[in-house]
Length: 418
Image (cartoon, rainbow, N blue to C red):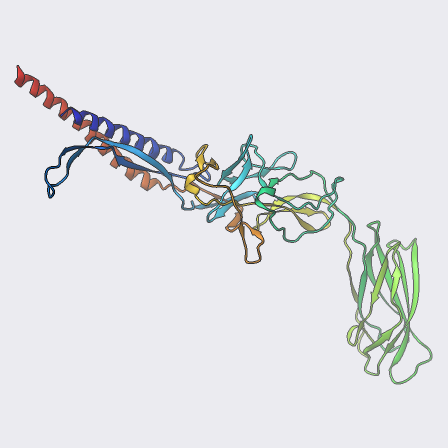
Protein backbone atom coordinates (compact mmCIF):
# COMPACT_ATOMS: atom_id res chain seq x y z
CA UNK A 1 0.00 0.00 0.00
CA UNK A 2 2.83 2.40 0.86
CA UNK A 3 4.34 1.71 -2.57
CA UNK A 4 1.41 3.56 -4.11
CA UNK A 5 2.70 6.73 -2.46
CA UNK A 6 6.09 6.43 -4.15
CA UNK A 7 4.67 5.38 -7.50
CA UNK A 8 2.32 8.34 -7.40
CA UNK A 9 5.14 10.70 -6.43
CA UNK A 10 7.33 9.41 -9.29
CA UNK A 11 4.42 9.90 -11.67
CA UNK A 12 3.94 13.47 -10.48
CA UNK A 13 7.64 14.15 -10.92
CA UNK A 14 7.86 12.71 -14.42
CA UNK A 15 4.71 14.40 -15.65
CA UNK A 16 5.82 17.64 -14.02
CA UNK A 17 9.07 17.36 -15.97
CA UNK A 18 7.04 16.65 -19.09
CA UNK A 19 5.02 19.83 -18.54
CA UNK A 20 8.29 21.74 -18.12
CA UNK A 21 9.59 20.44 -21.45
CA UNK A 22 6.36 21.12 -23.33
CA UNK A 23 5.95 24.62 -21.89
CA UNK A 24 9.54 25.40 -22.86
CA UNK A 25 8.77 24.25 -26.40
CA UNK A 26 5.67 26.42 -26.48
CA UNK A 27 7.53 29.40 -25.03
CA UNK A 28 10.01 29.13 -27.94
CA UNK A 29 7.37 28.70 -30.63
CA UNK A 30 8.55 32.00 -32.18
CA UNK A 31 12.29 31.48 -31.60
CA UNK A 32 14.18 31.35 -34.90
CA UNK A 33 15.93 28.03 -35.47
CA UNK A 34 14.56 26.48 -32.26
CA UNK A 35 14.62 22.70 -32.02
CA UNK A 36 11.74 21.23 -30.04
CA UNK A 37 12.15 18.26 -27.70
CA UNK A 38 10.10 15.13 -27.13
CA UNK A 39 10.04 13.58 -23.65
CA UNK A 40 10.43 9.82 -23.23
CA UNK A 41 9.31 8.07 -20.03
CA UNK A 42 10.32 4.63 -18.77
CA UNK A 43 9.24 2.49 -15.82
CA UNK A 44 11.38 2.06 -12.73
CA UNK A 45 12.58 -1.42 -11.69
CA UNK A 46 9.85 -3.80 -10.68
CA UNK A 47 9.41 -5.69 -7.43
CA UNK A 48 8.82 -9.41 -7.87
CA UNK A 49 5.79 -10.80 -6.04
CA UNK A 50 6.01 -14.50 -6.82
CA UNK A 51 7.38 -16.98 -9.34
CA UNK A 52 6.51 -20.56 -8.40
CA UNK A 53 6.86 -23.56 -10.63
CA UNK A 54 8.30 -23.98 -14.09
CA UNK A 55 5.10 -22.95 -15.87
CA UNK A 56 3.98 -20.32 -13.41
CA UNK A 57 3.66 -16.73 -14.57
CA UNK A 58 6.26 -14.25 -13.34
CA UNK A 59 4.35 -11.90 -11.08
CA UNK A 60 5.74 -8.46 -10.28
CA UNK A 61 4.59 -4.94 -9.59
CA UNK A 62 6.15 -1.72 -10.83
CA UNK A 63 7.41 0.96 -8.50
CA UNK A 64 6.83 4.06 -10.59
CA UNK A 65 8.26 5.89 -13.62
CA UNK A 66 11.07 8.20 -14.52
CA UNK A 67 12.21 10.43 -17.37
CA UNK A 68 14.49 8.44 -19.66
CA UNK A 69 15.52 11.11 -22.13
CA UNK A 70 14.53 14.20 -24.06
CA UNK A 71 15.04 13.71 -27.80
CA UNK A 72 15.53 16.50 -30.31
CA UNK A 73 12.98 16.90 -33.08
CA UNK A 74 14.71 16.66 -36.45
CA UNK A 75 12.16 18.04 -38.91
CA UNK A 76 12.75 21.40 -40.60
CA UNK A 77 10.68 24.33 -39.36
CA UNK A 78 8.69 26.62 -41.64
CA UNK A 79 10.76 29.02 -43.75
CA UNK A 80 9.88 32.67 -43.24
CA UNK A 81 10.56 35.37 -45.85
CA UNK A 82 12.72 38.34 -44.76
CA UNK A 83 14.18 41.43 -46.43
CA UNK A 84 17.90 40.72 -45.86
CA UNK A 85 20.18 38.52 -47.95
CA UNK A 86 22.20 37.72 -44.82
CA UNK A 87 19.21 35.93 -43.26
CA UNK A 88 19.83 32.27 -44.08
CA UNK A 89 17.84 29.06 -43.65
CA UNK A 90 18.95 25.48 -44.21
CA UNK A 91 16.36 23.52 -46.18
CA UNK A 92 17.29 20.06 -44.97
CA UNK A 93 19.77 18.70 -42.48
CA UNK A 94 22.92 20.40 -41.27
CA UNK A 95 24.06 23.23 -39.02
CA UNK A 96 25.63 26.64 -39.31
CA UNK A 97 28.69 27.19 -37.11
CA UNK A 98 29.59 30.28 -35.14
CA UNK A 99 32.76 30.77 -33.15
CA UNK A 100 31.98 30.57 -29.43
CA UNK A 101 34.27 31.64 -26.64
CA UNK A 102 36.41 28.53 -27.07
CA UNK A 103 34.83 25.97 -29.36
CA UNK A 104 32.50 26.32 -32.36
CA UNK A 105 28.81 26.46 -31.59
CA UNK A 106 26.28 24.94 -34.00
CA UNK A 107 22.90 26.45 -34.75
CA UNK A 108 19.97 26.47 -37.15
CA UNK A 109 19.40 30.17 -36.49
CA UNK A 110 20.67 31.96 -39.59
CA UNK A 111 20.00 35.50 -38.36
CA UNK A 112 23.32 36.86 -39.61
CA UNK A 113 24.49 40.34 -40.52
CA UNK A 114 27.61 42.33 -41.32
CA UNK A 115 28.80 44.30 -38.30
CA UNK A 116 30.55 47.68 -38.26
CA UNK A 117 33.79 45.98 -39.38
CA UNK A 118 32.01 44.09 -42.18
CA UNK A 119 32.51 40.76 -40.37
CA UNK A 120 29.66 38.28 -40.78
CA UNK A 121 28.27 37.69 -37.29
CA UNK A 122 25.31 36.06 -35.57
CA UNK A 123 22.62 37.87 -33.63
CA UNK A 124 24.75 37.47 -30.50
CA UNK A 125 27.81 38.95 -32.22
CA UNK A 126 29.70 35.67 -32.75
CA UNK A 127 31.60 35.25 -36.02
CA UNK A 128 30.08 32.92 -38.62
CA UNK A 129 32.44 30.19 -39.84
CA UNK A 130 33.05 29.37 -43.49
CA UNK A 131 35.62 29.47 -46.28
CA UNK A 132 37.42 32.68 -47.20
CA UNK A 133 38.14 33.27 -50.89
CA UNK A 134 41.71 34.43 -50.15
CA UNK A 135 41.39 36.80 -53.10
CA UNK A 136 41.90 40.04 -51.16
CA UNK A 137 45.39 41.51 -50.77
CA UNK A 138 46.81 43.12 -47.66
CA UNK A 139 46.09 46.56 -49.13
CA UNK A 140 42.43 45.64 -49.77
CA UNK A 141 42.60 45.02 -53.51
CA UNK A 142 40.71 42.17 -55.15
CA UNK A 143 43.40 39.88 -56.54
CA UNK A 144 41.12 37.49 -58.47
CA UNK A 145 37.50 37.42 -59.53
CA UNK A 146 35.80 34.23 -58.27
CA UNK A 147 32.47 33.19 -59.75
CA UNK A 148 31.95 30.08 -57.60
CA UNK A 149 33.91 29.35 -54.43
CA UNK A 150 34.68 25.81 -53.30
CA UNK A 151 34.50 24.96 -49.60
CA UNK A 152 37.76 24.22 -47.83
CA UNK A 153 38.20 21.22 -45.51
CA UNK A 154 36.21 20.90 -42.30
CA UNK A 155 39.18 21.92 -40.16
CA UNK A 156 40.02 24.86 -42.43
CA UNK A 157 36.77 26.75 -41.85
CA UNK A 158 37.41 30.17 -40.33
CA UNK A 159 35.76 33.41 -39.30
CA UNK A 160 34.23 35.23 -42.27
CA UNK A 161 35.83 38.67 -41.96
CA UNK A 162 35.95 41.20 -44.79
CA UNK A 163 37.48 44.67 -45.24
CA UNK A 164 35.27 47.74 -45.13
CA UNK A 165 37.06 49.14 -48.20
CA UNK A 166 37.88 47.05 -51.23
CA UNK A 167 39.04 47.96 -54.72
CA UNK A 168 38.37 46.11 -57.96
CA UNK A 169 41.55 46.74 -60.00
CA UNK A 170 41.61 48.08 -63.52
CA UNK A 171 41.70 45.51 -66.31
CA UNK A 172 43.09 47.18 -69.47
CA UNK A 173 41.42 46.47 -72.79
CA UNK A 174 43.15 43.80 -74.84
CA UNK A 175 40.86 43.64 -77.89
CA UNK A 176 38.34 45.79 -79.73
CA UNK A 177 36.05 44.34 -82.39
CA UNK A 178 34.33 46.55 -84.97
CA UNK A 179 31.12 46.16 -86.95
CA UNK A 180 30.54 48.59 -89.83
CA UNK A 181 29.68 49.00 -93.50
CA UNK A 182 32.09 51.34 -95.26
CA UNK A 183 29.95 51.28 -98.41
CA UNK A 184 31.31 51.40 -101.95
CA UNK A 185 31.66 55.14 -102.48
CA UNK A 186 34.96 56.95 -101.83
CA UNK A 187 33.79 59.07 -98.87
CA UNK A 188 35.64 58.65 -95.56
CA UNK A 189 33.94 56.37 -93.00
CA UNK A 190 34.76 56.34 -89.29
CA UNK A 191 33.91 54.04 -86.38
CA UNK A 192 35.13 54.16 -82.79
CA UNK A 193 35.38 52.18 -79.57
CA UNK A 194 35.98 52.98 -75.90
CA UNK A 195 39.08 51.24 -74.59
CA UNK A 196 40.51 51.25 -71.07
CA UNK A 197 44.18 51.94 -70.40
CA UNK A 198 46.28 50.57 -67.49
CA UNK A 199 45.59 53.75 -65.48
CA UNK A 200 41.85 53.07 -65.59
CA UNK A 201 41.05 55.83 -68.08
CA UNK A 202 38.52 55.42 -70.85
CA UNK A 203 40.09 56.38 -74.17
CA UNK A 204 38.83 56.48 -77.74
CA UNK A 205 40.06 54.09 -80.42
CA UNK A 206 39.08 55.65 -83.75
CA UNK A 207 39.23 53.94 -87.15
CA UNK A 208 39.10 56.01 -90.34
CA UNK A 209 38.49 54.14 -93.61
CA UNK A 210 39.47 55.74 -96.95
CA UNK A 211 38.93 54.00 -100.28
CA UNK A 212 42.17 53.55 -102.19
CA UNK A 213 42.14 55.68 -105.39
CA UNK A 214 43.75 52.80 -107.27
CA UNK A 215 41.50 49.75 -107.28
CA UNK A 216 42.34 46.23 -108.42
CA UNK A 217 39.36 44.16 -109.48
CA UNK A 218 37.63 42.01 -108.44
CA UNK A 219 36.78 43.38 -104.99
CA UNK A 220 37.89 46.65 -103.43
CA UNK A 221 40.77 47.97 -101.36
CA UNK A 222 40.66 50.50 -98.50
CA UNK A 223 43.20 52.23 -96.35
CA UNK A 224 42.55 52.46 -92.59
CA UNK A 225 44.09 54.72 -89.95
CA UNK A 226 43.72 53.81 -86.27
CA UNK A 227 44.22 56.38 -83.50
CA UNK A 228 44.07 56.05 -79.71
CA UNK A 229 43.46 59.29 -77.85
CA UNK A 230 41.94 60.66 -74.68
CA UNK A 231 38.18 61.20 -74.70
CA UNK A 232 38.63 64.97 -74.93
CA UNK A 233 41.00 64.52 -77.88
CA UNK A 234 43.83 66.50 -76.29
CA UNK A 235 46.25 63.57 -76.02
CA UNK A 236 47.08 61.11 -78.80
CA UNK A 237 48.73 57.90 -77.62
CA UNK A 238 49.37 56.08 -80.90
CA UNK A 239 48.53 56.01 -84.61
CA UNK A 240 48.69 52.96 -86.87
CA UNK A 241 47.84 52.46 -90.55
CA UNK A 242 46.85 49.42 -92.55
CA UNK A 243 45.15 48.09 -95.65
CA UNK A 244 41.77 46.34 -95.87
CA UNK A 245 40.69 44.11 -98.77
CA UNK A 246 37.10 43.10 -99.60
CA UNK A 247 35.92 40.61 -102.23
CA UNK A 248 33.50 41.51 -105.02
CA UNK A 249 30.52 40.75 -102.75
CA UNK A 250 31.79 43.11 -100.03
CA UNK A 251 32.97 40.47 -97.54
CA UNK A 252 36.20 41.12 -95.66
CA UNK A 253 39.10 39.10 -97.05
CA UNK A 254 42.09 40.41 -95.07
CA UNK A 255 43.61 43.41 -93.34
CA UNK A 256 47.06 44.44 -92.12
CA UNK A 257 46.02 46.44 -89.05
CA UNK A 258 46.88 44.25 -86.07
CA UNK A 259 47.19 46.27 -82.85
CA UNK A 260 47.70 49.72 -81.37
CA UNK A 261 49.14 51.11 -78.15
CA UNK A 262 46.61 52.41 -75.62
CA UNK A 263 48.65 54.51 -73.19
CA UNK A 264 50.92 51.62 -72.26
CA UNK A 265 48.81 48.56 -73.16
CA UNK A 266 48.46 46.98 -76.61
CA UNK A 267 44.94 46.55 -78.00
CA UNK A 268 44.31 44.03 -80.77
CA UNK A 269 42.12 45.41 -83.55
CA UNK A 270 39.60 42.87 -84.75
CA UNK A 271 37.82 43.76 -87.99
CA UNK A 272 36.18 40.33 -88.21
CA UNK A 273 36.02 38.10 -91.26
CA UNK A 274 33.58 37.57 -94.09
CA UNK A 275 30.37 39.37 -93.21
CA UNK A 276 31.03 39.26 -89.45
CA UNK A 277 32.69 42.60 -88.84
CA UNK A 278 33.56 45.33 -91.33
CA UNK A 279 32.05 44.96 -94.82
CA UNK A 280 31.81 46.96 -98.05
CA UNK A 281 28.27 46.65 -99.40
CA UNK A 282 26.25 49.00 -101.62
CA UNK A 283 23.35 49.55 -99.19
CA UNK A 284 22.29 52.60 -97.15
CA UNK A 285 24.96 53.22 -94.53
CA UNK A 286 24.22 52.79 -90.84
CA UNK A 287 26.28 53.84 -87.84
CA UNK A 288 28.98 51.35 -87.01
CA UNK A 289 29.34 49.68 -83.62
CA UNK A 290 32.06 48.09 -81.55
CA UNK A 291 32.77 46.04 -78.48
CA UNK A 292 35.86 46.02 -76.31
CA UNK A 293 36.92 44.18 -73.19
CA UNK A 294 38.52 45.78 -70.17
CA UNK A 295 37.13 46.93 -66.82
CA UNK A 296 37.59 50.26 -65.10
CA UNK A 297 38.56 50.45 -61.44
CA UNK A 298 35.71 49.99 -58.98
CA UNK A 299 35.15 50.65 -55.29
CA UNK A 300 33.24 48.41 -52.91
CA UNK A 301 29.51 49.10 -52.68
CA UNK A 302 28.74 46.36 -50.17
CA UNK A 303 28.47 42.66 -49.39
CA UNK A 304 25.54 40.31 -49.78
CA UNK A 305 24.93 36.55 -49.66
CA UNK A 306 23.58 34.67 -52.66
CA UNK A 307 21.58 31.43 -52.91
CA UNK A 308 24.80 29.43 -52.97
CA UNK A 309 25.66 30.72 -49.45
CA UNK A 310 28.52 32.75 -50.96
CA UNK A 311 29.45 36.21 -49.76
CA UNK A 312 29.43 38.46 -52.84
CA UNK A 313 31.25 41.79 -53.05
CA UNK A 314 29.65 44.33 -55.42
CA UNK A 315 31.63 47.22 -56.92
CA UNK A 316 30.81 50.59 -58.46
CA UNK A 317 31.99 49.37 -61.88
CA UNK A 318 29.23 46.78 -61.97
CA UNK A 319 31.49 43.84 -61.19
CA UNK A 320 30.89 41.19 -58.56
CA UNK A 321 33.07 38.53 -57.00
CA UNK A 322 32.71 35.83 -54.39
CA UNK A 323 34.96 36.50 -51.38
CA UNK A 324 33.69 33.87 -48.92
CA UNK A 325 31.21 31.08 -48.37
CA UNK A 326 29.11 30.07 -45.35
CA UNK A 327 29.67 26.41 -44.43
CA UNK A 328 27.03 23.87 -43.43
CA UNK A 329 28.29 21.19 -41.02
CA UNK A 330 26.86 17.70 -40.47
CA UNK A 331 27.08 15.11 -37.70
CA UNK A 332 26.76 11.35 -37.60
CA UNK A 333 24.26 11.70 -34.74
CA UNK A 334 22.46 15.02 -34.41
CA UNK A 335 20.64 13.66 -31.37
CA UNK A 336 23.97 13.43 -29.58
CA UNK A 337 24.65 17.17 -29.76
CA UNK A 338 24.82 18.85 -26.38
CA UNK A 339 22.32 21.66 -26.06
CA UNK A 340 23.64 24.97 -24.76
CA UNK A 341 20.34 26.77 -25.36
CA UNK A 342 17.28 26.28 -27.50
CA UNK A 343 19.19 27.23 -30.65
CA UNK A 344 22.86 26.63 -29.78
CA UNK A 345 24.55 23.24 -29.57
CA UNK A 346 28.06 21.88 -29.25
CA UNK A 347 29.58 18.61 -30.31
CA UNK A 348 29.90 15.72 -27.86
CA UNK A 349 31.24 12.20 -27.86
CA UNK A 350 27.75 11.01 -28.81
CA UNK A 351 27.38 13.32 -31.80
CA UNK A 352 30.83 12.70 -33.24
CA UNK A 353 33.04 15.22 -34.95
CA UNK A 354 31.55 17.63 -37.53
CA UNK A 355 31.93 16.66 -41.17
CA UNK A 356 31.35 18.19 -44.60
CA UNK A 357 29.62 16.36 -47.42
CA UNK A 358 31.40 15.81 -50.75
CA UNK A 359 30.18 15.51 -54.32
CA UNK A 360 31.04 12.79 -56.84
CA UNK A 361 34.30 14.57 -57.67
CA UNK A 362 35.36 14.69 -54.03
CA UNK A 363 34.77 18.44 -53.60
CA UNK A 364 33.42 19.67 -50.28
CA UNK A 365 29.80 20.85 -50.53
CA UNK A 366 27.15 22.10 -48.11
CA UNK A 367 24.94 19.12 -48.88
CA UNK A 368 21.71 20.98 -48.10
CA UNK A 369 20.22 24.00 -49.83
CA UNK A 370 20.95 27.28 -48.06
CA UNK A 371 18.27 29.86 -48.79
CA UNK A 372 18.90 33.59 -48.46
CA UNK A 373 16.19 36.10 -47.52
CA UNK A 374 14.68 33.37 -45.32
CA UNK A 375 14.78 32.22 -41.70
CA UNK A 376 13.73 28.89 -40.23
CA UNK A 377 11.07 29.14 -37.55
CA UNK A 378 10.72 26.78 -34.58
CA UNK A 379 10.03 23.21 -35.67
CA UNK A 380 7.60 22.70 -32.78
CA UNK A 381 3.88 22.86 -33.55
CA UNK A 382 1.54 24.70 -31.22
CA UNK A 383 -1.30 22.19 -31.70
CA UNK A 384 1.00 19.35 -30.66
CA UNK A 385 2.09 21.21 -27.55
CA UNK A 386 -1.41 22.04 -26.39
CA UNK A 387 -2.50 18.43 -26.85
CA UNK A 388 0.48 17.15 -24.89
CA UNK A 389 -0.24 19.63 -22.10
CA UNK A 390 -3.76 18.25 -21.70
CA UNK A 391 -2.46 14.66 -21.56
CA UNK A 392 0.28 15.52 -19.08
CA UNK A 393 -2.12 17.48 -16.89
CA UNK A 394 -4.53 14.55 -16.79
CA UNK A 395 -1.68 12.20 -15.91
CA UNK A 396 -0.49 14.59 -13.19
CA UNK A 397 -3.99 14.74 -11.70
CA UNK A 398 -4.34 10.95 -11.84
CA UNK A 399 -1.04 10.42 -10.02
CA UNK A 400 -2.02 12.91 -7.34
CA UNK A 401 -5.29 10.97 -6.98
CA UNK A 402 -3.37 7.73 -6.42
CA UNK A 403 -1.51 9.38 -3.53
CA UNK A 404 -4.74 10.57 -1.85
CA UNK A 405 -6.28 7.16 -2.42
CA UNK A 406 -3.34 5.39 -0.76
CA UNK A 407 -3.52 7.88 2.12
CA UNK A 408 -7.22 7.15 2.67
CA UNK A 409 -6.55 3.41 2.63
CA UNK A 410 -3.79 3.71 5.22
CA UNK A 411 -6.00 5.85 7.43
CA UNK A 412 -8.74 3.24 7.14
CA UNK A 413 -6.32 0.47 8.09
CA UNK A 414 -5.15 2.42 11.12
CA UNK A 415 -8.74 2.93 12.22
CA UNK A 416 -9.39 -0.79 11.92
CA UNK A 417 -6.32 -1.49 14.08
CA UNK A 418 -7.80 0.60 16.89
